[in-house]
Length: 417
Image (cartoon, rainbow, N blue to C red; front, side, top):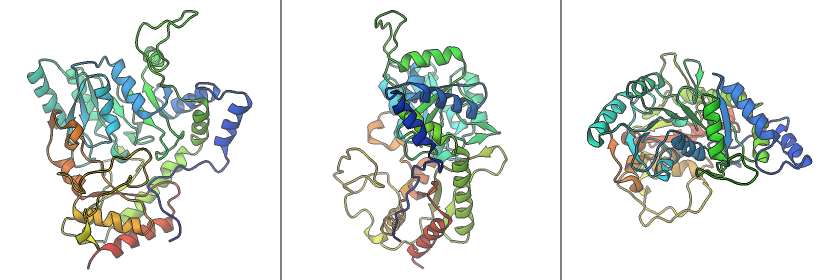
Protein backbone atom coordinates (compact mmCIF):
# COMPACT_ATOMS: atom_id res chain seq x y z
CA UNK A 1 0.00 0.00 0.00
CA UNK A 2 1.70 3.16 -1.16
CA UNK A 3 -0.30 5.88 0.55
CA UNK A 4 -1.01 6.25 4.26
CA UNK A 5 -4.64 6.20 5.34
CA UNK A 6 -5.35 8.84 8.00
CA UNK A 7 -8.22 8.99 10.47
CA UNK A 8 -9.71 12.20 9.10
CA UNK A 9 -7.64 14.29 6.72
CA UNK A 10 -8.67 17.84 5.78
CA UNK A 11 -10.44 17.83 2.40
CA UNK A 12 -10.98 20.93 0.26
CA UNK A 13 -13.90 21.52 -2.10
CA UNK A 14 -13.42 20.31 -5.67
CA UNK A 15 -14.38 23.80 -6.89
CA UNK A 16 -11.50 25.32 -4.92
CA UNK A 17 -13.78 27.82 -3.18
CA UNK A 18 -11.51 27.95 -0.14
CA UNK A 19 -8.74 29.45 -2.26
CA UNK A 20 -11.23 31.83 -3.89
CA UNK A 21 -12.25 33.33 -0.55
CA UNK A 22 -8.65 33.46 0.66
CA UNK A 23 -7.60 35.23 -2.53
CA UNK A 24 -10.39 37.76 -2.06
CA UNK A 25 -9.02 38.44 1.42
CA UNK A 26 -5.58 39.14 -0.03
CA UNK A 27 -6.94 41.19 -2.92
CA UNK A 28 -8.86 43.44 -0.53
CA UNK A 29 -6.07 43.42 2.11
CA UNK A 30 -8.35 41.78 4.70
CA UNK A 31 -5.59 39.51 6.03
CA UNK A 32 -6.03 40.60 9.65
CA UNK A 33 -8.46 39.12 12.18
CA UNK A 34 -12.12 39.76 11.32
CA UNK A 35 -13.43 40.87 7.93
CA UNK A 36 -15.99 39.83 5.30
CA UNK A 37 -15.05 36.13 5.41
CA UNK A 38 -15.62 35.98 9.17
CA UNK A 39 -19.02 37.60 8.77
CA UNK A 40 -19.92 35.30 5.88
CA UNK A 41 -18.74 32.16 7.68
CA UNK A 42 -20.76 33.05 10.78
CA UNK A 43 -23.86 33.55 8.64
CA UNK A 44 -23.32 30.20 6.91
CA UNK A 45 -23.03 28.51 10.32
CA UNK A 46 -26.17 30.23 11.59
CA UNK A 47 -28.13 28.94 8.60
CA UNK A 48 -26.73 25.45 9.11
CA UNK A 49 -27.49 25.31 12.83
CA UNK A 50 -30.92 26.93 12.58
CA UNK A 51 -32.99 27.50 15.75
CA UNK A 52 -32.40 31.27 15.37
CA UNK A 53 -28.94 30.90 16.92
CA UNK A 54 -26.11 33.44 16.69
CA UNK A 55 -22.53 32.36 16.02
CA UNK A 56 -19.18 33.79 17.11
CA UNK A 57 -16.23 32.46 15.07
CA UNK A 58 -13.18 31.92 17.28
CA UNK A 59 -9.56 30.79 17.13
CA UNK A 60 -10.35 27.31 18.51
CA UNK A 61 -13.01 25.12 20.05
CA UNK A 62 -11.08 25.32 23.32
CA UNK A 63 -11.52 29.11 23.26
CA UNK A 64 -15.26 28.54 22.82
CA UNK A 65 -15.39 26.34 25.94
CA UNK A 66 -13.39 28.95 27.86
CA UNK A 67 -15.62 31.88 26.88
CA UNK A 68 -18.82 29.96 27.53
CA UNK A 69 -17.67 29.17 31.06
CA UNK A 70 -16.88 32.84 31.68
CA UNK A 71 -20.26 33.85 30.29
CA UNK A 72 -21.90 31.37 32.68
CA UNK A 73 -20.17 33.10 35.58
CA UNK A 74 -17.84 30.22 36.39
CA UNK A 75 -14.91 31.35 38.53
CA UNK A 76 -12.59 30.60 41.41
CA UNK A 77 -13.93 27.91 43.73
CA UNK A 78 -16.81 26.85 41.48
CA UNK A 79 -17.44 23.37 40.13
CA UNK A 80 -18.42 22.27 36.63
CA UNK A 81 -19.85 18.87 35.69
CA UNK A 82 -17.77 17.53 32.79
CA UNK A 83 -17.97 14.30 30.83
CA UNK A 84 -14.94 12.21 31.72
CA UNK A 85 -14.76 10.29 28.44
CA UNK A 86 -13.46 13.10 26.24
CA UNK A 87 -10.49 15.09 25.00
CA UNK A 88 -8.84 17.49 27.47
CA UNK A 89 -10.26 20.59 25.73
CA UNK A 90 -13.57 19.92 27.48
CA UNK A 91 -12.05 20.13 30.96
CA UNK A 92 -8.86 22.20 30.78
CA UNK A 93 -10.72 25.53 30.34
CA UNK A 94 -12.51 24.84 33.64
CA UNK A 95 -9.12 25.10 35.32
CA UNK A 96 -8.30 28.26 33.35
CA UNK A 97 -11.01 30.11 35.29
CA UNK A 98 -9.97 28.68 38.66
CA UNK A 99 -12.85 26.22 38.90
CA UNK A 100 -12.79 22.46 39.49
CA UNK A 101 -14.02 19.90 36.93
CA UNK A 102 -16.23 17.21 38.43
CA UNK A 103 -16.07 14.21 36.13
CA UNK A 104 -19.11 12.15 35.25
CA UNK A 105 -18.82 8.72 33.63
CA UNK A 106 -20.64 7.46 30.53
CA UNK A 107 -23.58 5.25 29.66
CA UNK A 108 -23.00 2.27 27.39
CA UNK A 109 -25.43 3.22 24.60
CA UNK A 110 -23.75 6.36 23.24
CA UNK A 111 -20.55 6.35 25.37
CA UNK A 112 -21.49 9.86 26.49
CA UNK A 113 -22.43 11.43 29.83
CA UNK A 114 -24.74 9.22 31.89
CA UNK A 115 -27.81 11.34 32.81
CA UNK A 116 -28.65 9.21 35.86
CA UNK A 117 -25.11 9.42 37.20
CA UNK A 118 -25.09 13.15 36.41
CA UNK A 119 -28.12 13.73 38.63
CA UNK A 120 -26.64 11.69 41.47
CA UNK A 121 -23.36 13.60 41.15
CA UNK A 122 -25.09 17.00 41.23
CA UNK A 123 -27.08 16.06 44.31
CA UNK A 124 -23.92 14.87 46.03
CA UNK A 125 -21.93 18.00 45.10
CA UNK A 126 -24.69 20.16 46.60
CA UNK A 127 -24.54 18.04 49.75
CA UNK A 128 -20.72 18.17 49.94
CA UNK A 129 -20.12 21.82 48.98
CA UNK A 130 -23.37 23.49 49.93
CA UNK A 131 -23.85 24.92 46.43
CA UNK A 132 -24.80 23.61 43.01
CA UNK A 133 -22.33 23.30 40.10
CA UNK A 134 -22.20 26.28 37.74
CA UNK A 135 -22.41 24.41 34.40
CA UNK A 136 -22.75 21.00 32.74
CA UNK A 137 -20.54 20.04 29.77
CA UNK A 138 -21.72 16.95 27.81
CA UNK A 139 -19.58 15.86 24.84
CA UNK A 140 -20.57 14.30 21.48
CA UNK A 141 -17.88 11.62 21.58
CA UNK A 142 -16.70 10.77 18.05
CA UNK A 143 -19.78 12.60 16.77
CA UNK A 144 -22.31 10.44 18.64
CA UNK A 145 -25.24 12.47 20.00
CA UNK A 146 -25.60 12.48 23.78
CA UNK A 147 -28.88 11.80 25.57
CA UNK A 148 -29.54 15.53 25.46
CA UNK A 149 -33.24 15.34 26.30
CA UNK A 150 -32.49 13.69 29.62
CA UNK A 151 -29.43 15.85 30.30
CA UNK A 152 -31.46 19.00 29.69
CA UNK A 153 -34.17 17.67 32.03
CA UNK A 154 -31.63 17.19 34.82
CA UNK A 155 -30.13 20.62 34.10
CA UNK A 156 -33.58 22.21 34.19
CA UNK A 157 -34.44 20.52 37.48
CA UNK A 158 -31.42 22.10 39.18
CA UNK A 159 -31.28 25.32 37.15
CA UNK A 160 -27.79 24.68 35.77
CA UNK A 161 -26.77 25.93 32.28
CA UNK A 162 -25.61 23.38 29.71
CA UNK A 163 -22.58 23.98 27.49
CA UNK A 164 -22.68 21.44 24.66
CA UNK A 165 -19.24 20.37 23.49
CA UNK A 166 -20.18 19.44 19.93
CA UNK A 167 -16.60 19.82 18.66
CA UNK A 168 -16.62 16.27 17.29
CA UNK A 169 -20.34 16.36 16.55
CA UNK A 170 -20.67 19.10 13.94
CA UNK A 171 -23.71 18.17 11.88
CA UNK A 172 -24.88 15.40 14.20
CA UNK A 173 -28.53 15.67 15.22
CA UNK A 174 -30.86 14.54 17.98
CA UNK A 175 -34.53 14.37 17.02
CA UNK A 176 -33.60 16.31 13.89
CA UNK A 177 -32.02 19.22 15.76
CA UNK A 178 -28.34 20.06 15.27
CA UNK A 179 -26.11 19.41 18.28
CA UNK A 180 -24.86 22.57 19.95
CA UNK A 181 -28.27 24.25 19.75
CA UNK A 182 -29.95 22.67 22.80
CA UNK A 183 -27.98 24.22 25.66
CA UNK A 184 -27.28 27.77 26.71
CA UNK A 185 -24.09 27.60 24.62
CA UNK A 186 -22.74 25.23 22.00
CA UNK A 187 -19.09 24.61 21.10
CA UNK A 188 -17.89 23.79 17.57
CA UNK A 189 -14.41 22.94 16.30
CA UNK A 190 -12.88 23.32 12.85
CA UNK A 191 -9.46 21.86 13.63
CA UNK A 192 -7.61 20.18 10.77
CA UNK A 193 -9.10 16.75 11.51
CA UNK A 194 -12.74 17.71 12.08
CA UNK A 195 -15.80 17.40 9.81
CA UNK A 196 -14.85 20.69 8.17
CA UNK A 197 -11.73 22.72 8.81
CA UNK A 198 -10.58 26.31 8.95
CA UNK A 199 -6.99 25.10 9.47
CA UNK A 200 -7.40 25.95 13.14
CA UNK A 201 -10.54 27.44 14.60
CA UNK A 202 -13.85 26.99 16.33
CA UNK A 203 -17.12 28.73 17.06
CA UNK A 204 -19.50 29.41 19.90
CA UNK A 205 -23.23 28.95 19.39
CA UNK A 206 -25.31 31.46 21.37
CA UNK A 207 -29.05 31.63 21.96
CA UNK A 208 -29.81 35.31 21.49
CA UNK A 209 -28.45 38.76 20.69
CA UNK A 210 -27.52 39.58 24.29
CA UNK A 211 -25.43 36.41 24.68
CA UNK A 212 -23.86 37.02 21.28
CA UNK A 213 -22.81 40.57 22.24
CA UNK A 214 -21.35 39.43 25.55
CA UNK A 215 -19.31 36.66 23.93
CA UNK A 216 -18.18 39.04 21.20
CA UNK A 217 -16.92 41.48 23.84
CA UNK A 218 -14.99 38.79 25.72
CA UNK A 219 -13.51 37.47 22.46
CA UNK A 220 -12.12 40.89 21.46
CA UNK A 221 -10.33 41.97 24.68
CA UNK A 222 -13.52 43.49 26.12
CA UNK A 223 -13.00 46.99 24.75
CA UNK A 224 -15.49 49.65 25.78
CA UNK A 225 -16.92 52.22 23.35
CA UNK A 226 -14.46 55.05 23.81
CA UNK A 227 -12.17 56.68 21.23
CA UNK A 228 -9.30 54.95 23.05
CA UNK A 229 -8.80 51.51 24.56
CA UNK A 230 -10.84 51.26 27.77
CA UNK A 231 -11.05 47.87 29.51
CA UNK A 232 -13.48 47.30 32.38
CA UNK A 233 -13.33 43.50 32.27
CA UNK A 234 -10.62 41.01 31.28
CA UNK A 235 -11.10 39.90 27.69
CA UNK A 236 -9.26 37.62 25.28
CA UNK A 237 -7.86 37.70 21.74
CA UNK A 238 -9.94 34.78 20.50
CA UNK A 239 -11.54 35.88 17.22
CA UNK A 240 -10.99 33.94 14.00
CA UNK A 241 -8.83 35.40 11.26
CA UNK A 242 -10.33 36.45 7.94
CA UNK A 243 -8.00 34.03 6.14
CA UNK A 244 -9.12 31.00 8.20
CA UNK A 245 -12.76 32.02 7.82
CA UNK A 246 -12.28 32.02 4.04
CA UNK A 247 -11.39 28.33 4.26
CA UNK A 248 -14.49 27.81 6.38
CA UNK A 249 -16.77 29.47 3.82
CA UNK A 250 -15.52 27.10 1.15
CA UNK A 251 -15.87 24.12 3.48
CA UNK A 252 -19.50 24.92 4.23
CA UNK A 253 -20.32 24.19 0.58
CA UNK A 254 -19.31 20.54 1.06
CA UNK A 255 -20.17 19.90 4.73
CA UNK A 256 -23.20 17.77 3.87
CA UNK A 257 -21.07 15.73 1.45
CA UNK A 258 -18.55 15.13 4.24
CA UNK A 259 -21.24 14.02 6.68
CA UNK A 260 -22.76 11.67 4.09
CA UNK A 261 -19.33 10.16 3.41
CA UNK A 262 -18.60 9.47 7.08
CA UNK A 263 -21.97 7.74 7.44
CA UNK A 264 -21.26 5.68 4.32
CA UNK A 265 -17.90 4.56 5.72
CA UNK A 266 -19.58 3.64 9.03
CA UNK A 267 -22.09 1.47 7.16
CA UNK A 268 -19.27 -0.28 5.31
CA UNK A 269 -17.45 -1.07 8.56
CA UNK A 270 -20.69 -2.40 10.06
CA UNK A 271 -21.22 -4.70 7.09
CA UNK A 272 -17.63 -5.86 6.51
CA UNK A 273 -16.77 -6.44 10.17
CA UNK A 274 -20.08 -8.01 11.14
CA UNK A 275 -18.88 -11.57 10.78
CA UNK A 276 -15.55 -11.23 12.55
CA UNK A 277 -15.64 -12.86 15.97
CA UNK A 278 -14.22 -10.65 18.71
CA UNK A 279 -14.69 -7.35 16.80
CA UNK A 280 -17.70 -5.10 17.48
CA UNK A 281 -18.47 -1.86 15.60
CA UNK A 282 -20.01 0.81 17.82
CA UNK A 283 -23.20 2.16 16.24
CA UNK A 284 -25.80 4.69 17.28
CA UNK A 285 -28.87 3.50 19.19
CA UNK A 286 -31.60 2.33 16.79
CA UNK A 287 -34.36 4.23 18.60
CA UNK A 288 -34.76 6.93 15.93
CA UNK A 289 -33.57 10.05 17.76
CA UNK A 290 -29.89 9.66 16.97
CA UNK A 291 -28.23 10.89 13.79
CA UNK A 292 -24.47 10.74 14.26
CA UNK A 293 -21.99 12.27 11.84
CA UNK A 294 -19.63 9.37 12.68
CA UNK A 295 -16.66 11.73 12.76
CA UNK A 296 -14.56 8.67 13.58
CA UNK A 297 -15.72 5.07 13.39
CA UNK A 298 -14.95 2.99 16.47
CA UNK A 299 -14.62 -0.69 17.28
CA UNK A 300 -14.10 -2.74 20.41
CA UNK A 301 -11.95 -5.85 20.70
CA UNK A 302 -12.88 -8.77 22.92
CA UNK A 303 -10.07 -9.25 25.50
CA UNK A 304 -9.72 -12.88 24.40
CA UNK A 305 -8.93 -11.91 20.79
CA UNK A 306 -5.30 -12.61 19.93
CA UNK A 307 -3.42 -10.21 17.64
CA UNK A 308 -0.11 -10.77 15.88
CA UNK A 309 2.75 -9.19 17.84
CA UNK A 310 0.65 -8.96 20.99
CA UNK A 311 3.51 -10.35 23.06
CA UNK A 312 5.53 -7.21 22.24
CA UNK A 313 2.87 -4.66 23.23
CA UNK A 314 4.15 -1.84 25.45
CA UNK A 315 7.72 -3.17 25.38
CA UNK A 316 9.17 0.10 24.07
CA UNK A 317 8.55 3.72 25.03
CA UNK A 318 6.79 5.82 22.40
CA UNK A 319 9.02 8.83 21.65
CA UNK A 320 6.73 10.81 19.35
CA UNK A 321 3.06 11.58 18.96
CA UNK A 322 1.04 8.58 17.86
CA UNK A 323 -0.65 9.47 14.60
CA UNK A 324 1.61 12.42 13.88
CA UNK A 325 -0.10 14.90 16.19
CA UNK A 326 1.57 18.30 16.08
CA UNK A 327 3.30 19.97 18.99
CA UNK A 328 6.01 19.19 21.50
CA UNK A 329 5.66 15.73 23.00
CA UNK A 330 7.15 14.98 26.41
CA UNK A 331 8.94 11.62 26.25
CA UNK A 332 7.43 9.24 28.78
CA UNK A 333 9.60 7.59 31.43
CA UNK A 334 7.71 4.31 31.18
CA UNK A 335 5.97 2.41 28.38
CA UNK A 336 2.97 1.68 30.58
CA UNK A 337 0.51 3.46 32.89
CA UNK A 338 -2.04 2.23 35.41
CA UNK A 339 -4.84 2.70 32.85
CA UNK A 340 -4.17 1.75 29.24
CA UNK A 341 -5.68 -0.23 26.35
CA UNK A 342 -5.36 -4.00 26.47
CA UNK A 343 -2.33 -5.57 24.80
CA UNK A 344 -4.36 -6.77 21.82
CA UNK A 345 -5.61 -3.22 21.13
CA UNK A 346 -2.07 -1.81 21.18
CA UNK A 347 -0.84 -4.72 19.04
CA UNK A 348 -3.55 -4.04 16.44
CA UNK A 349 -2.64 -0.33 16.41
CA UNK A 350 1.01 -1.19 15.75
CA UNK A 351 0.09 -3.80 13.11
CA UNK A 352 -2.12 -1.33 11.27
CA UNK A 353 0.48 1.42 11.55
CA UNK A 354 2.99 -0.85 9.81
CA UNK A 355 0.38 -1.40 7.08
CA UNK A 356 0.04 2.35 6.50
CA UNK A 357 -3.17 2.82 8.46
CA UNK A 358 -3.62 5.39 11.23
CA UNK A 359 -5.64 3.98 14.12
CA UNK A 360 -5.78 5.26 17.67
CA UNK A 361 -7.03 4.21 21.09
CA UNK A 362 -10.18 5.87 22.41
CA UNK A 363 -9.81 8.97 24.59
CA UNK A 364 -8.36 8.11 27.97
CA UNK A 365 -10.96 9.09 30.59
CA UNK A 366 -10.12 12.41 32.21
CA UNK A 367 -10.65 11.03 35.70
CA UNK A 368 -7.71 8.68 35.04
CA UNK A 369 -5.39 11.45 33.84
CA UNK A 370 -2.58 12.29 36.32
CA UNK A 371 -3.29 16.02 36.03
CA UNK A 372 -6.81 15.41 37.41
CA UNK A 373 -5.92 12.89 40.11
CA UNK A 374 -7.46 15.09 42.81
CA UNK A 375 -10.61 16.09 40.93
CA UNK A 376 -13.96 14.70 42.10
CA UNK A 377 -15.23 11.90 39.87
CA UNK A 378 -18.43 9.89 39.73
CA UNK A 379 -17.66 6.68 37.89
CA UNK A 380 -19.46 3.51 36.92
CA UNK A 381 -16.64 1.73 35.08
CA UNK A 382 -18.02 2.28 31.56
CA UNK A 383 -15.38 4.65 30.17
CA UNK A 384 -12.46 2.75 31.72
CA UNK A 385 -13.76 -0.53 30.31
CA UNK A 386 -14.24 0.99 26.85
CA UNK A 387 -10.80 2.61 26.90
CA UNK A 388 -9.26 -0.81 27.45
CA UNK A 389 -10.95 -2.41 24.45
CA UNK A 390 -11.69 0.40 21.99
CA UNK A 391 -10.06 1.78 18.86
CA UNK A 392 -10.76 4.52 16.30
CA UNK A 393 -10.67 3.73 12.58
CA UNK A 394 -10.27 6.10 9.59
CA UNK A 395 -13.47 7.71 8.31
CA UNK A 396 -12.51 11.00 6.62
CA UNK A 397 -13.40 12.20 3.11
CA UNK A 398 -10.19 10.78 1.64
CA UNK A 399 -11.00 7.27 2.91
CA UNK A 400 -12.28 5.41 -0.15
CA UNK A 401 -14.33 2.23 -0.34
CA UNK A 402 -11.15 0.37 -1.33
CA UNK A 403 -9.42 1.86 1.70
CA UNK A 404 -12.14 0.56 4.01
CA UNK A 405 -11.84 -2.90 2.45
CA UNK A 406 -8.05 -2.75 2.89
CA UNK A 407 -8.46 -1.70 6.54
CA UNK A 408 -10.86 -4.58 7.20
CA UNK A 409 -8.56 -7.04 5.42
CA UNK A 410 -5.66 -5.76 7.54
CA UNK A 411 -7.67 -6.32 10.73
CA UNK A 412 -8.47 -9.84 9.59
CA UNK A 413 -4.79 -10.50 8.81
CA UNK A 414 -3.81 -9.29 12.27
CA UNK A 415 -6.00 -11.78 14.08
CA UNK A 416 -4.32 -15.00 15.23
CA UNK A 417 -6.60 -17.88 14.27
